[in-house]
Amino acid sequence: MSAELAKTGGALAIRPDQTQWTEEQGLVLRQSGISDAVTKAELSGFLHLCQRTGLDPFSRQIYLIGRYSKKEQRDVFTPQTGIDGYRVIAQRVTSQTGGSYGYEDTLWCDTSGKWRDVWLADVPPAAAKATVIRNGQRFSAVARFSEYVQAFPDGNPKGLWAKMPAGQIAKCAEALALRKAFPHDLAGVYTAEEMAQADNPAPERHLRKVQPGEGDPWANDGQQGTTAVKGRSQPAQDIADVAAQTSNQGAVKDLYRQARDEGLLAETVKVDRELSELGAYLIARGKQLAAPAPEKTGDGSGEVIEGEIVETLSEGPSVVEGPSEADVAEHQLRTAAKAAGLDNLDAEFEQSYGIPIAQAGAQQLREMTAILTGHAA
Image (cartoon, rainbow, N blue to C red; front, top):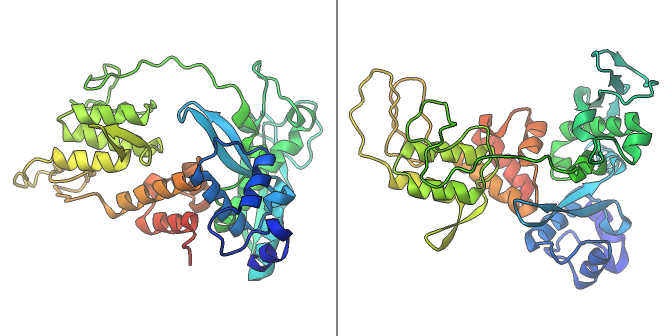
């Protein structure tokens, strides 16, 4: 892969050892549609991804696509390729590492749950299933049409999703299956078919904003003093503001969990006129609110103290003096994902490892971090 990068492209060739885009490369990238709104981190992540996958942005094998993010208040750039780019990577990796890979027949599902090996109906299928076989192991994935279709504001499919719905959703299922079969090689890049729905109009939301220090009357988990609201998104700054106002360490712990589940730990927030990462601030705030350790009662109450951001264990009383190894590894992973421009980290991790980030061990989290930072063995 590295040799190919060095041999092709002339003055635009991406060298395996380069750490930033050259002036000539930058000019061509901007002519391809990358605006000045792109961040240095996004460009660096894109360069690393091109080096790792062997896809050439100057031959239009891979793109950096900008889409406006309300959360970021700017265009956020995401690497994209076509399904052919995925196939090129899979074939190249197989040739370099040995072994074999192939496919089972694609299947389509109707709304009754019946699977078919050919889609003849005039209406779109409800889902498609693709199975990749690598070195004798099966990697199957199902993509639902409603989750990926690119639609007009009225909900009707547009473009190829209207003309060839079965083919479009089959590409999404194939991309998911290939990413399971080649997790290290395809991490961080998505196909255009998968990302088409990102351009759909966002649904209107009418949510009540929780003010800093205010208990939420809608919360029903029975925990006093907890201001985190499960299942409802809050901006990172709001979470930091609530943590700054509360004197309840349990509330900070819940805020940390909420920020972790919503992928906000690596977001930058402002506290006391200082900028900090949300995850780091919540850990420090939890430590600040830690109380002296009471005697263990042995009654199984699981009282947790002297901690930064800690979990209440189910088996008897415990004392945790800091964040767990997995918490630290997760924070490092989310920071690396943000720097690499990987916006869909949770979905990518679950596709690669088969479990959510919250259930992963420190070793798996560190392994994914090494992949994103280019330090994988």
